[in-house]
Each structure stands twice: as C-alpha cells, then as structure tokens.
Length: 132
Image 1 (cartoon, one colour):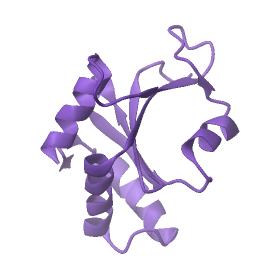
Image 2: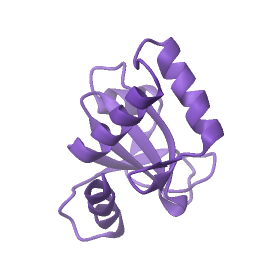
Image 3: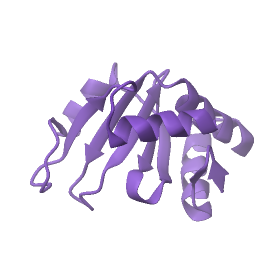
Image 4: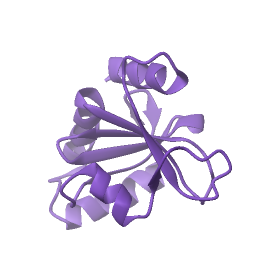
C-alpha cells in the first residue's frame, strides 16, 4: 500500500490496523490511512531514532499525540500509533531511548529534527509532507 509516496507493506498494515482498531483508536482501514496521512502532513515535531534491532535511521512524524515511524533507507512506514504518554519525550524516556544519535547503536538514541534545517532528514520530511 502507498501512503504519501511511502510503502506500508500489506502484512504490516493489516497487523497495525487491527491493533489500532481493537484499541478503539480508528473506525476502519480508511480512517487509519487518514490518520497516518494527517499525522505526516500536519506534524509539528520530527525525530530521528536509531534502535538496536537494525541500527537504521527511522524518521518519526509527531502530531496530535499520533506518531508515524518511517524506515528512512527503505522509505517504508513501519507503524503508526497513538501516544499514551503525556509527551513524546516521556515516551522515549520510558523506552530508555536516550537523546543524541549513536553511530554504532551501542544504545538506542534519538534527536529532534527541525523541518527548516538543511540536512538529509529535514529534506526527507519536507518531501514527504509535500506528497500528502
């Protein structure tokens, strides 16, 4: 499935949609797609996250307590979910994801990206938002 020019593979989409539906966060598949598009298009905070599992850059779009995680290298949506914490920094803290990107992924890390910066991450964010 394509959303805002990104791939959200069918099996991943179905798994994550079903979970959000069972949580009562979305009404149907169309509504889930609308939430993802709205989160990407209207995001006002953006983060790069590196995790132990693959040490690849993930771009996180954050808006109205929803998060969309995108695997940058593959331009693929990994998941979209509603944040159950007070703020995104608390989410990172509870998951022991520390501020400051690690090149070798000895620890899980994140940094905030400003949309108007001139770097790979900010250019990607602007491109994807323009596609929504």
